[in-house]
Image 1 (cartoon, rainbow, N blue to C red):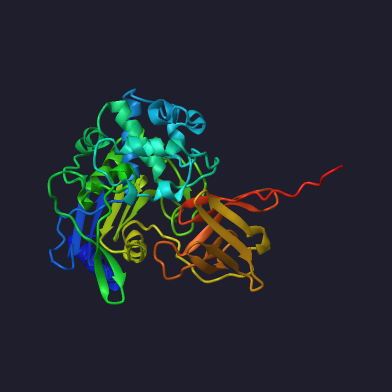
Image 2: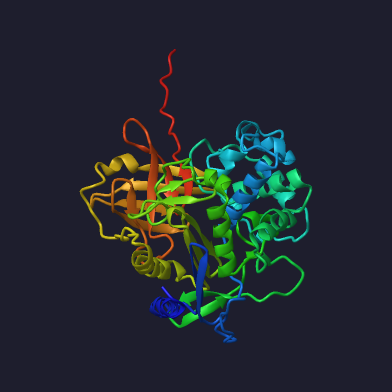
Length: 438
């Protein structure tokens, strides 16, 4: 696909989903093709160009995993070291003495899960060098959530703290030295840097059109995805590093066969694996304040594709665009997103009923006579329609999170975890009343 064809493809799908601005790039056997569309901000009309920065969001986690791998190769740490060994604030935490850095990379460490920790961006927005240390201290006060797979922001912030203690550098400087400079990512920087940089505004889709939203900046959550700003070309340089450095292939080894519908089919070490027909595909996505970013790597084709958008509709755009692009360019077929209810596939719905909770977040699930589930939380109630054996449709119009998924089924077929987007809430065990004897 040449530059003109790629630009036409990008423009067609961006217009279809009302995305104000986007950048796309294809890497194939060392050759790079890029295209740009629209504006960085609807209020200024500044065009998107090759120098325009977007937030890669949680693709930062894949970058953090890469630096951890480089530090392991240099003997600064081992993936099998305990978390407590490299995060001094957690030396008194039993879970951190047991869990390893590999467990953090695999999202299976059992760290404390609380909404206040995972999403406490506004309460931890100080920009000084002690931000990661203070967040780690807050984590130390919590109890382990249990050893089940769950996506987490905090776990990646703890990995950022481990980078700091292993290099004696602020994590941002360590990222520059151990990744950005090695990969030639000269257009990648941090929104917490003092100098002013050129970047897009994120946009919320509304009935009146796209509206700019304030950028999310929180240094404490930087390793989870709140501060890196990059270009689509630099994302391809990052992908090229993984294609060229055979030692990094270890990060693509599957650690958890946890399929979350519309998101991933397995989780590795900082990468997701996608069960697409035609080739083995890895990658990850970014979701942050009005921006959505995507990177897919196809090692057997020595290829990668990156897409960055400045809209909450970016995920819908990704689905339609990548379906066409991967098929035409690589003969890779992405399974269609099916959101039609299938009432005969989930079996006895009473097995899903229960309370799933963190200490500060609770969801109650009940089965209805209509063959659906009623899901009740602090934010309200919604009816969930079965799509498969473990997946239920909740918000069909939500491009990021249309479904919920159940996992960790016991011998009786009862799920022990409820996944909202990618975060797992464990099922609470109800204690049966004990009989009293005289």
